[in-house]
Image 1: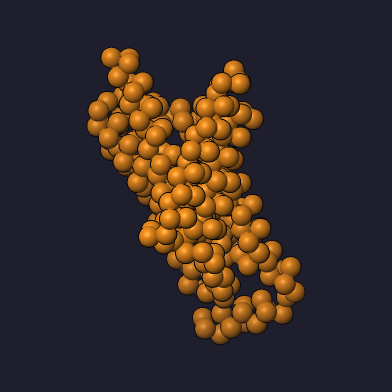
Image 2: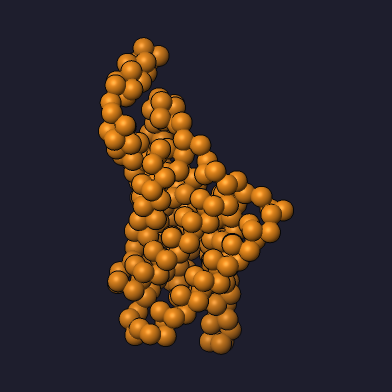
Amino acid sequence: MKKFKKIVEDQYHSFSRPIQIGIQAWLYVVLALIMMYVVYAWFQLIASTVMHDSWRLTGSIYASLLAGLGIIALLYVYLVPIMLWCKYPRAQSNLKNKRFWLETIGWLIAVKAFLLLLANITSNHINTSNQNAIDHIFYSGSVNRLYIILTAILMAPIIEEFIFRWLPFRLIKAPWLAFILGALGFTIAHSPSTFVAFLVYLSMAVALEINFYRNGFWASFLLHFGINFTAALTMLSTLTSIH
């Protein structure tokens, strides 16, 4: 296997820089798709436990989870090390730095203001299939609400920031391409069903990408946490008004 790895590495080095970047981008897309599938299957598995009979699972989902994790492991062991030369963005997360907090809070205010503006100037329904599934679980019971809140404000930001920010900037030597693929991947993964919904998630993605590049992983995580936390508060206030 070491000989095979050396052949792959030598072949990779023989390519021109544009082709190498293309291979890096392809590898990122493959990894991101597999990871998203594994994460979706895992969340579906947890949701089936929370929702009982509301989510029907087949036995194949367990095999799919194992297969997905196996493919990710193989890619990381044999292919990623060959291309894993990219460093983190120049700016690292520094929680003691005033700029870190000012920019993160500033982006949070900007994103929420843009979403409020969109809600006021358009009559289009901006919910997506992703949001509709969240609403369905959230409004169906108190245990389910706890599951959604914990997932939205803790698990989702960490997983999505890893897949759509950390991973592309780590794998792809061209920052502009890492930025584009990460932003588009984040937007498409949230299943926007209208142009307005696409703008909603794209605006979040752009803010997260810029904050990640300038201030590091924890800056984008805290911004993501803030966006989802305020959305969870809105859902809770809506629930209170219904009752």
